[in-house]
Length: 587
Image (cartoon, rainbow, N blue to C red):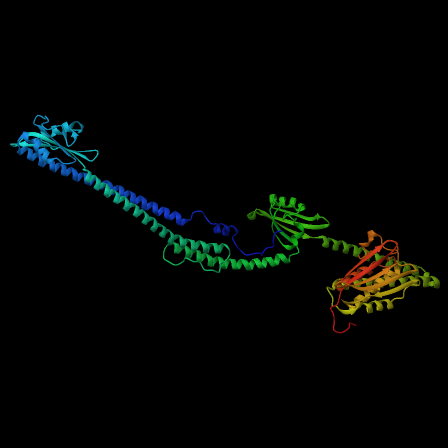
């Protein structure tokens, strides 16, 4: 069943659970990966750029060396005789450097294979030779770090031939380049590892502050608003976020304090209401909120009872619904339902009108019965007066007869008036004062105040502890009334027995007779005002004695009832709170 307002702490229910749930990957790991990726990409680009630039510089330098060497070699060939070309080339031979000499007609004058490289495998050789014979100095870089150079050979200031040279990296140069490349790879790996470590440390430093703020925010969701936030030191954006959260915490603490005070006031108001107040989902009938007075209108499964559903749904569609006499079992309720759009629910205020309607009926019956009881003696008085005025006053016998009737009717009106006044006084009294008294004394006083009819025997039985918390005068009047009722409804020969004994925390007093008893259908009504049962029960009274006795017992904080079997007799019982033990005997 939904709890009344004001139970529990103010909190945000879902945020606390989600924030405490451990995630498979944290922001720290994401930041570390991001920083490492940036470092790796930067190092890779730097490696590629440096490697490519270095190799190009090395190749450019080798090309320039090849060009210079070829020019020098062509100068030597121009000084020497043409048939000494083979010897000159042999002296200039070197690994990775191949050269061929051509005459001024472009014919090869040296061996076709130079340093293991056939001339036929040299691409662009003829084109380069023709360019050299034309007086140019072509230089061509070919794939595989190969440079092709052609230089004209001058003799006597005229072009006498051409020198074609093919230069490539030597094994030593290639090994040196590979060694440098390996060193660069090692440096790249070390740089990446250092970047990852630094990235992780930076990410940890950032996320640790963010985590402290997240933990502080989690405490806010739990309603722990008195604890200052962590991570508000510094001068960066995270500090600004922390200070904003701290400002929000202070504002929330003030707001929630006001809400708690308002909630406590509302809780006290709702708990004190006699009307049932409920907030209900009209589709599922689930009760989201209720006060203690709504307990009887909520089913065990936490939903509103079936009788309310049509009115709840009508209010959800029309905006409101009312009913003044909704019957639920033996109770009557007035219903006022209003839609609450912001909640997607309806607010129902239900008031139990059962006792109110019963009081209205009882008051109408009371007035009607009182008027009826007064009408008969008043009519008798009016009739007697009319007869006396018509001449009966001159007849001594008739005059005495009607005067006796007037006296009886006036006495009946006086007794009825006294009973009504007594009942009115009892109704006006709340809960009267009481004292510890011996019920045996009250029973004996009531029995001595009445003279039982001839043929009736009165027995008094008192057992054990009999001190009760009651009012002496009221208790004596109650016992007197019960004894009169027993005398009236027990035909001689018969017996009336008064018993008193301790029953748990109460003192039980019983007045039992051997009269005609009460019909089962009348047992529940005999304490009603002006009710006189069939048979002999209170035929001569006004039907107020038992209702007055009941009210007197109520004033003393006790209970009264009857057990009866028709044709056997009745036992009226009174239960009063037992008195606390006293140091001296009670009077």
